[in-house]
Image 1 (cartoon, rainbow, N blue to C red):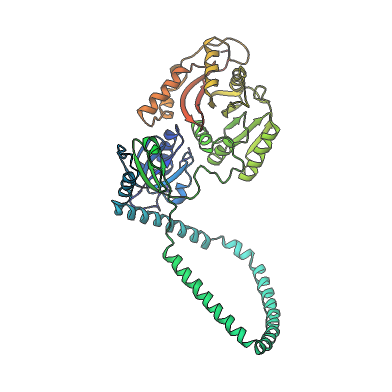
Image 2 (image 1 turned 60 degrees about the vertical axis):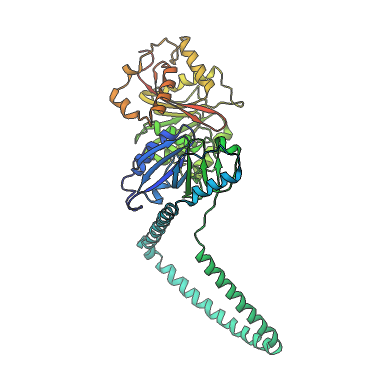
Length: 476
């Protein structure tokens, strides 16, 4: 992840307490990101949410890539006791939750307003400090516009004089009607002024909603913003109207943007590297990577004309057409020399529309062929892909492109221990144990050694993000 130093200086002086929602399994990525990007402290998580304290301003907070939505935390406490099935009693509990500590609301709203004011000041400052060269270049145009405006005013004045004469004549004939019309206009102006004053007094508004899960969801549903579950109660204010996961630069969505960014963040992308997505689809992974790590040569390949057309439209919309090259090619016959790519990141298709079957073995073989020694592969695999790859290795099917049998080097023999320690940053003991279980289940594939694994949610189904390192050239 690209570190952004100094971005937190103009935020709340003492730091504010926030929380983000995240897709299941992405909590470790979000915890690392808030520490790196926002210099956040007091970082902790519960399933689906990450809590942190930061002094960052709105501009920096908007840059979070692995989060779904961002909230200013009002309070977090133990769950409700739902022994009673009375909706009235539960409603009273919810009222007490939101009303028993008005100080927390006042503090949160004060921070929220300060964030907005700081953002507004920055916008005004950037407009004030617009490039003076543009003003000088446009001086002649401005003078010409002023002359043209003066001429137009003269013409307008002549028209107005004519209109005044007509109005005077009409007024003499319709004096009573004109008087009534003026009175109605005055009344309308007064009503508008009163509405504006009322709007100024009531300009602090919130959209309130509620989401319940667990046992409490079976007994009560309400429309206030409280996150309720069997293990916690969380109250917060949404910081942005649009979710962070909704990328303005993606015209047609493919893979979930947060998943795509998480995969790219694992790939150790360095400036000047060659990065390939051999099954790019609509190009979401490449878009996320190119936005975060721009000084890289990106390539995307796909066999589908419609997918490549959609990817091209996405690149144009994101302003990245010159940064990413698209190729029509099969993933099992890439038009690239052996060991010519530094990094491969790809979402291996699965589901009813994509039945790869045994082709998954040939796909991995071709990726292994074009990847340089020491290079990284990050793949999104279904459970079926995982089982097939594991069975291929256990049945001793050779995975190198030359068809020769390869040994299975252990990960400790093929990786620099210091490098492995730097890459691995488990968010908690439970995440570390889960990831280690995935790694234990997946042996090396030829020269590709698995080094990290994360189980993530894609909504209706789960998938596995696997990271591999190429330890040696096949056949050696």
